[in-house]
Amino acid sequence: MYKLNEGSIQLDNMSIPLDPANRHYQQFLDWVIENGTADIDGGEEVTQEDYTALRASEYPDMATQLDMQYWDNVNGTTLWQDTIDAIKAKYPKTLVRTTAPKPIPAWVQEEADAKLFARQLAAYKQAVTRLSQYVVADGRPELTEMQPTGEVAFNEETGIMEPALVEVVVQTAIDPVEATIEQTIYPDTLEGEVVIETITNPLITQDEVERAEAQAIVSSTPLAVKEAYNV
Image 1 (tube, rainbow, N blue to C red):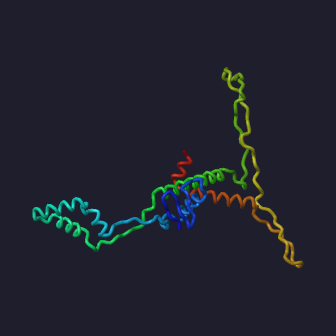
Image 2 (image 1 turned 30 degrees about the horizontal axis):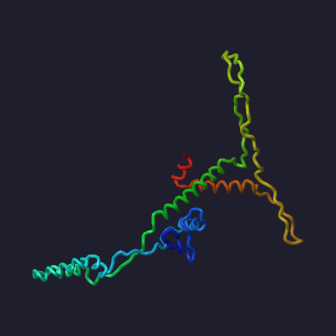
Image 3 (image 1 turned 60 degrees about the horizontal axis):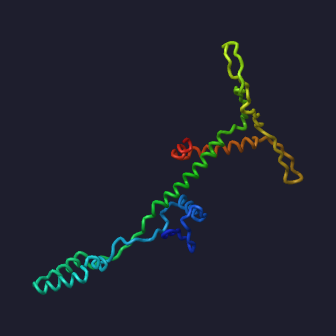
């Protein structure tokens, strides 16, 4: 179990500094991402002192008590005893010292959330890039566009000089892969026969798997991460 100390994190006999460059610190954040903060030992804090400590905190200092006793003797009053009795009544002997687990500091969850956000953003970028690639079963067409050459030419229809354009290939064509291939299956024994079977092209199968995995990442990515990517 991880235990939080002042300025460090304790794991067994190892002290982990609060340093993002420390790999053990990063492992701690990974652990928080996977498990949350419920099982982190943040230590304990006193929720109530016992009656002796509470009384001592309100008893007048010794000089004041001696002064009260002096004037009680002079005037025949009971101010000192009344004060002491009132404090004892306020804090009866039934009050015992109690403790409770300290709340986990907010920075722990904030650091883990920030790391998870960065991880999700990186995965989302990679998934979007993968989905933007062409489907190998379909191939892709050649695309061209007209681009200026840097020169000008006279346009007889408009009667003005206009930038000269040239058609440029901006995307090369890629033929679709064969939908199926033949696979040879050799027998396990000498008596067996060689079998040739037709199967889906493994390139298509791999492409479909990768695209499905990428789509799953895109679908499960939180909206805040998508918005950060778009920005």
